[in-house]
Image 1 (spheres, rainbow, N blue to C red):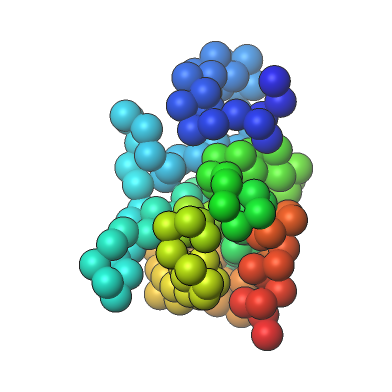
Image 2 (image 1 turned 60 degrees about the horizontal axis):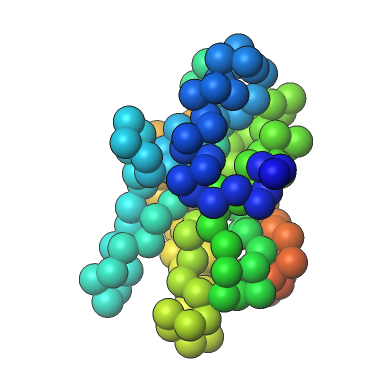
Length: 157
């Protein structure tokens, strides 16, 4: 099973083994749920909670970093931010980048434009928390795969 097909529980269960093997070479979801981790949560206007995952290079606090707001795929109905660890593996380790991944609402939970609203809320959250996250507000990029790419394009319009 590759990293991209893991669900949240599989990702959490395998992380300790992978951490020992990699010895700091891979990024880690350091703010992404799990028992020993903290979550970044932001309240929506309706009172519900938007979960936001933040990925950085292990062992280094970001400073003056570029932010990449990355939306996962899944046809607007499936998926979790944790499925994007494969992209984080390629984008984060060799760059001064902080990857921000919203756990946006799926189409069966709330109709359009709920997912896009969540992505926009994550963008605003990123700007408001830039100093604490060690990122530059003039270097925030949006991207994603599949449905996430569609959300990124809509977010940038």
